[in-house]
Amino acid sequence: MNLAQIFTDLVFFSFAAILVGSALMTIISRNPVRSALFLVLAFFAATGLWILLEVEFLGLILILVYVGAVMTLFLFVVMTLNIDVEEQRSSFVRYLPFAIVIVAMLVILMVYVISPGHLNPSELTTTGGQPVNYSNTTELGMVLYTDYAYPFELAGILLLVAIIAAISLTFHGKGNNKTQNPDQQILIRREDRIRMVKMQGDKK
Image 1: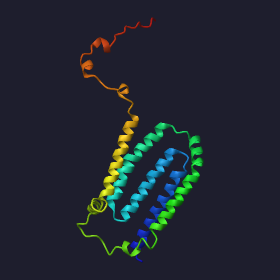
Image 2 (image 1 turned 45 degrees about the vertical axis):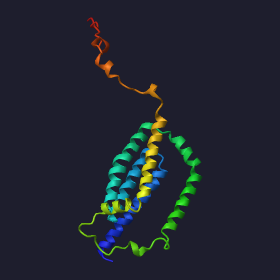
Image 3 (image 1 turned 180 degrees about the horizontal axis):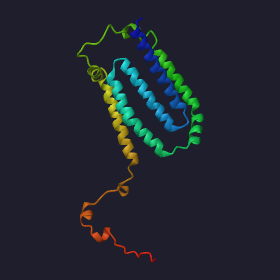
Image 4 (image 1 turned 90 degrees about the horizontal axis):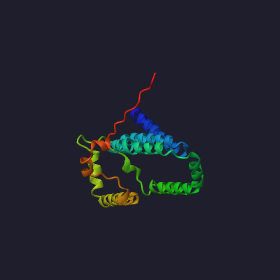
């Protein structure tokens, strides 16, 4: 094993340790703002792993979309809501058995997927560097829109249904809409907007 391979393995395990640690801190942290920040750190660590796997497109998308947009929105919402920490702790204890069951199911599923009968390690080894004109974005698009075209379209339909459901839940009729009337804005008079008030000065 040469020095470059040792360095690559060291960087990989460093990013993996940061990812696992930040994911755990996202769950067990008592402050929701800190949980969101640890989730951002987990995204950065996952980006490092993607880049080590030579999938730069997914790593950049993870930074630009999730860290740059989604997590910024999460932080804004969390800091605005003023979440009750005591109620959050009680909810954590209440749903702990369900969380343990779900985590156990996920662990069993991961062990089943990465078992030798389903994952061949020889297929994961690369024979060398990629050619000059290689693009992982093109390869990802070819797989996504050919082999997984129907699941991709199904995910788009589900997101569209979720958007329509969110709009229908927040829409309360025309009476509560804050609309503007251009005719009234044009025909407004200065007396209706500004009222001049003459105030008496202080007498010395």
